[in-house]
Image 1 (spheres, one colour):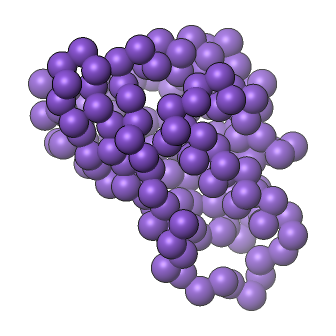
Image 2: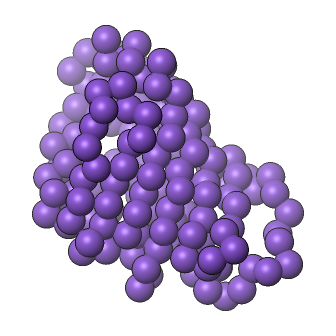
Length: 144
């Protein structure tokens, strides 16, 4: 992980725990290990894509998240999600992470790359919110 930000003076052990949980989540996602990913979600987890070209509704609750992630396992194979920067929030439950994502669509063989910013909230050591922002024009072209 490359951290391009200075460590703010306000960061506490609670912030560190949130950062560890959020980066472990992202690293697990980047390996494509969807079974392990499900253990990192809070039961009331929420996945949001505010700028998705398909205007996707949020995915809410562990059962819906499991269905969503296990369904993508078959055709979206991650090649890696290297983290570029981590920005802890003033509230220790929140962190913003910048990363680069590389995927392969196994149905088409087409490779896809994009830049991402995610807002992550961690409660009780698990991800309860994962709000993902990306270049929606690139995504629309990939999904074409």
